[in-house]
Amino acid sequence: MNKKKLSMTIYASKKVVAVGGGHGLGRMLAALKDFGSNATGIVATTDNGGSTGRIRNCQGGIAWGDTRNCINQLITDPSISSMMFEYRFKGAGELDGHNLGNLMLTALDNLSVRPLDATNLIRNMLKVDVNIIPMSEHPSDLKALAPDGRWVTGETNVDEMPEKLIRLDLEPEVPATKEGVIAIEEADAIILGPGSFLTSIMPPLLLTEVGRAIANNRTAKLVFVENLSPEFGPAGQMTLQEKLEWCERSCQGRKIDVVLGETPHPELDGWNCITTPLASPNRDWRHDRAKLQQAIEWLLIK
Image: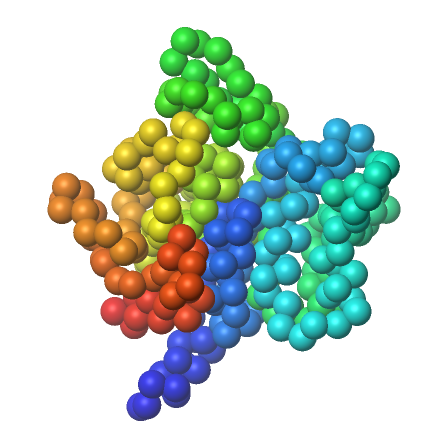
């Protein structure tokens, strides 16, 4: 079987779930685009900064920004609809800085359309085949415990903490979206990252049903994809081993099968670290879609 036919067989027969948020998950889902409806992104919904934060402050609801970002990176056919969805207002006044896609999704939410159904309506409009599922359809915020015993609430505040965190929680505790849990249960590969560790990768893993589903799916390969550039804030003070341990603890002790990155880690003798080129040729801090796609395909046939 030639390489192209092998790839087509993988796309048709294997299911992949990627967990995270922001630009990192969008990049991963763009790499999984050829899997079509066999690929699913479970998206963090705790952001409280920028346009998303302003909307949440006045309208409530889940954070839509990461979902919008993922859909943007999967649009293949530019159109008036896609330009409208990506449009960001400029100038003076209340609309300055707001993204029209965020407002569209918020409007659907306010019309009592289920958040997942709202996402699917936009996906269908923009011809996006990859499934995009919010981690929860109920609003929640990140809450972090500092070494001095202080609790800090809000994703942007957590990112700005000068010290390492003792613990990360959701406030309030919310249920996971059931379709996301089912996707994890049926997956052949579950991918964590790349992306901001504490504010993109960890939030979905803090949901009990998500961690349990990952723990119970023993046949799937659980893959952690490293970032290509260092993080700032409390995540930047964590070692890779600490990040892996946090993930495994949230997944009820489920061992990560593969750590995928560009840098060798001889100190991590308890994990299977695979080193391969992943960086974009013109931006070495960003993952290359084709290289990510090739790496995930290779892991699925190993």
